[in-house]
Image (tube, rainbow, N blue to C red; front, side, top):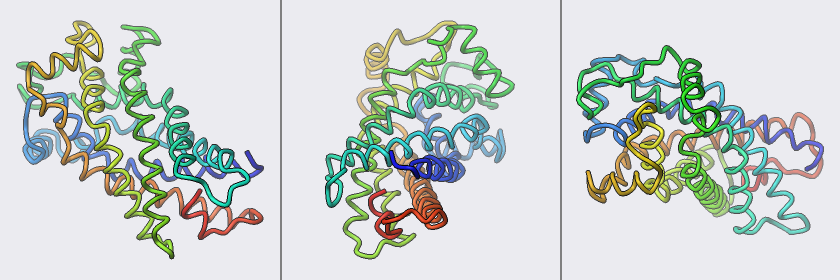
Length: 300
């Protein structure tokens, strides 16, 4: 790690906050599609707006917003420094270097991301309309806020309870992170003159592709984390796979695909644009020697 390695962490924090603000409403719809009764994206959108108003789309956002900076700071900080370490002495990083660095970033943020995701999902599935949860009534637990939710998880299951769904999330995040950064760098590398539009577009496409590769894992993770803490429906991830397939068939593992795609494109475009822009600005300000801001927009 060089003397300016901290810049990657700060830029990641800025990019993460930008992506969360853009993508949260669509993420709420995606989570409800995956965990509640079968319903179209448009139907969920209408019901949320009708019964909960605009604020309903931002349920569970407070905690992730505080943590989004930390998560993406860890991800991009570890990614950027790992990439420099892996490609040391090379003219440019190889695709394998990029993918490995992306996987390393995915692991680094996981220990913060799991409890954050758990709280976010618990808050997102709290509904106001009757019978919307697909179990004959509204959510059994009502949390006043993210802190109360996390306290409840800890009280019920200790530290392990706060990491419900960790195993599935590990595979989801490591695979997605490697694909995400490899695809992004590949797309940007084919543009001879990187621009803000190119960065946003490449980030958006990379986000959609990476999410598409792990959508079944995301469905399983969401269902496990949304499960009732007092009388859980699923014993483990494999039990969740079997019961979900038995109840809804193979198509259950693609639930939320379109809303995921609609969310992933602008959210990941905002993340990469915020990250690369702030990274280049800070490197210009601190005068990092031997680094070309335009080149940094491609290989960070």
